[in-house]
Image (tube, rainbow, N blue to C red; front, side, top):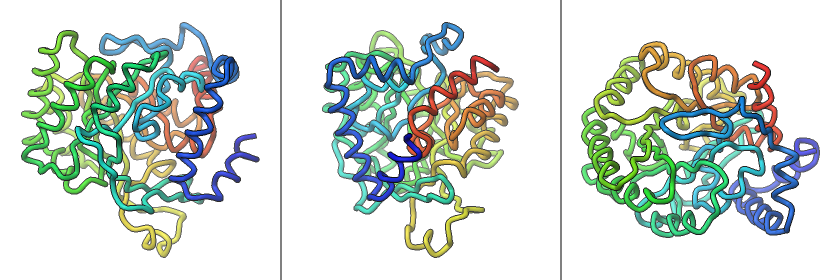
Length: 343
């Protein structure tokens, strides 16, 4: 029903406006007594064989919602109703910011993809932390953190420290986002000389706040083999818990969408089906080259159960969806979990 009726209607309108409309509708539906239970029965797959234990956390199942969908922690406490085992909120910055000018989210229907240049639009760490305190968590919640656009790179670690301290009591793990292509020159922070000192500081702060929360690094898909080797070194030297592969891409190669339309859209990070192969290649490379020395969360181009299994077989311990959820509908999560049980 989703792909036949709901998606064609939603795709008639601006993607960002549809996102806000959908959130409003979901908040309304989930406020009706019994609706969460009904959705859980439709989309949930409950089986102890799906449980995964990583970096001290027990995940009900290995399929999560990636960062970007629930930036401001508005629906995090309801997303288990769609069968997710965990959800990642954010990217969160210290101060609230509007992000880049609109229009900034675009569908590439022929490619089953999105291009976004949102620019870390969010309500800020203090407001989001307060929402997370009030919500009744029914699944593991990760906090994806970044720097404010106006913060220069030489002061970026102060922003990441602020986020970690404010969100520490209310999230289960952290993701350091230094690979988003839509926030100034943040990509410079992916370089080893920037990353190791910052991650070490975050680990020290994390240890000082009582219970240590796992810290992961999210990397981009445009990394060379040399840069991926450096990622392995960064994880070993900094002591963080693992890596998320991958963020959105700047590469526009081999798309079905016309060059004219891509030129009209302009800059932004590409997500969806075109990333499937590259993100899986990076997962495989890191898992093999490191001898599986750290956990990997695989994300990028998962539009089917087969896509998810490819990433798991390549070395991913958990997987995340976002663009695939938009194109394929909520039944995608159920199909993935059922396929994992059969594999």
